Image 1: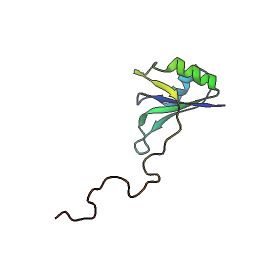
Image 2: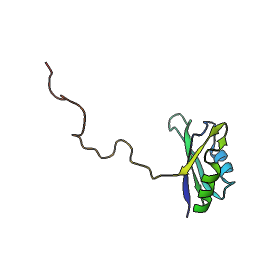
Image 3: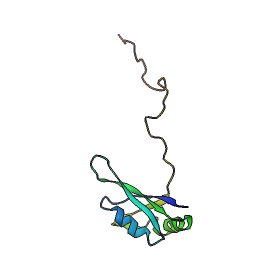
Image 4: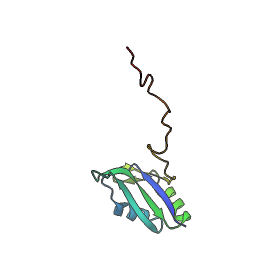
Length: 105
């Protein structure tokens, strides 16, 4: 069963291939992706690596968390499920807007 890892504090120059090459030292890498800005294409400073097994993922965390990659100490953790971002279902009447719809004078 593959295990997905979060890799943070990446230098903007780190590529997908750089991540793949590094993490292949800990086991078989299924995918390695640096997250980029959809408009500029520049790295957002983090990425995800998917290892083939949980043991390889645990080994990668142990081996690479706080290690240096291109001059930065990277953070490696088990990836958490994405929380819904702003925008989802919201109650229109929640929060803020004191005095909305009334003239104050």
